[in-house]
Length: 120
Image 1 (cartoon, rainbow, N blue to C red):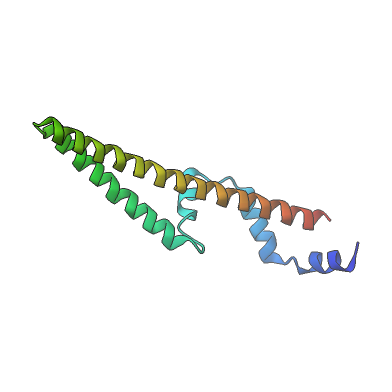
Image 2 (cartoon, rainbow, N blue to C red):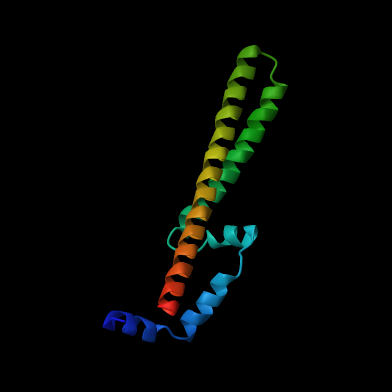
């Protein structure tokens, strides 16, 4: 091994071993969702979650008003708002799921990296 690899192997301590053991466990859906609220984008994730909830409430309100409207013009306008708000909720959820996938990929890369260092 090179001196770099020797230094890398010697730098693995008990914390790294514990972290590797933690990475071995599969993570459930709710744990993955919780992990998105940590790290450098935790405030963006929380903001997107709150915005998604607010837009969902807006879409339900628009849907209710669409069903209660008596004029065709109002039905179309409330329906358009309902459609756009529902689309907005969907797009925010797609971003949220992409964030979860991104964190899973990083987790797997870290696990592979530590395994290579450990076996190397």
